[in-house]
Amino acid sequence: MLSLITALLLFQDTNPVAPPPVNNGSAIVEMLQNSGPIAMTVLGVLLVASLFSWAIILGKWVSFRRARAQSRRFLRAFRKANRLQEIATVSEQFKPSPLVNVFDEVYETYRRQTGGFGPPRNITSLERAGQTAASESLTSMEQRLTWLASIGAISPFIGLFGTIMGIVDAFHGLGTEGTATLRAVAPGVSEALITTAAGLLVAIPAVIAYNQFTASCRDFAARMDDFARELLNSMEEAALGPNQDPGDIRGVHK
Image (cartoon, helix red, strand yellow):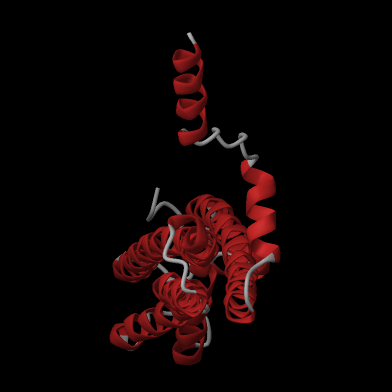
């Protein structure tokens, strides 16, 4: 009986006690507090990059949403109008739409050619004016999108740099102390891995937003090209009709 009790006591001594459950939230806060200066610098850089990218994302989302809504309204107004002059007088109401820039540039070129009356003298110049306006509008819409691409591409590497430096520091401390145990190296490694996770958290939204906005820009480019062709076709058909004025587009695009 005594030998059995002794064996049980020895068995309990040799088996480590299960560690108490750790709260993940408090563990992350503790690791952040224990992070070294390099890790904190990397996290600070990633925080600034994240705030900047979200500012771009929200700004572009609002501007693209307004551009889509105003483009739909402008097209309805254009197709219901009887004369180009009517559209020219109200085009400022739809200014967030890139289609307005195309219309204004084409109509201004037409006015310089004819004074606002009669057939256009050079349809090629009108086409070039529409292409130039579409290119300028597209360039304006693409502003700051390269920042999203750069943040999405670089942030994981910035986080990886912090992780590598943290692991190097952890193993350097391990070699200095001379205790080659998992318990000694695990805290330093876990603290270092936070920077990689932070880099991914910054990069993923930036990459998704960049892809979505790039697709939206391509869509707007196609819409501007289609509208320019529709506008020029309306002016040409009105000019070819008997006793017609290109400024009068009644029934041409209906």
